[in-house]
Image (cartoon, rainbow, N blue to C red; front, side, top):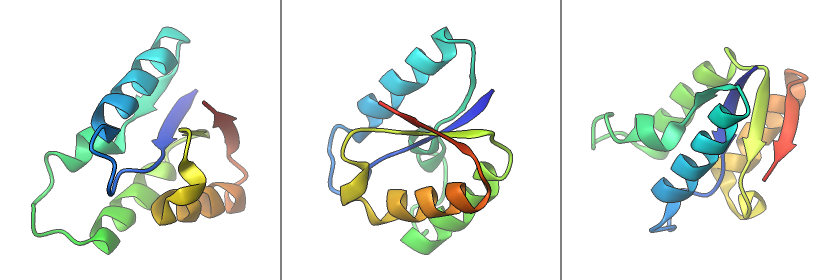
Length: 95
């Protein structure tokens, strides 16, 4: 299954490691993984939050499931991604 990782990024200095750990776990379980924390590192620094979300939603359209990291409810981006996932009837997995 192709899985998109979602969770708090803004304001979490350790978010990159949390996303990498989740990616490793999901790969070990046999999934293909979309890790937006990794992708964000190669995008232009001038991008705004909306630009990142546009890309995230496009990537999510290619996934069957979303994997929610702890603290996702405190993230406006993750909340939007969960809403998008529900609209698309994606499977929702929790850390």
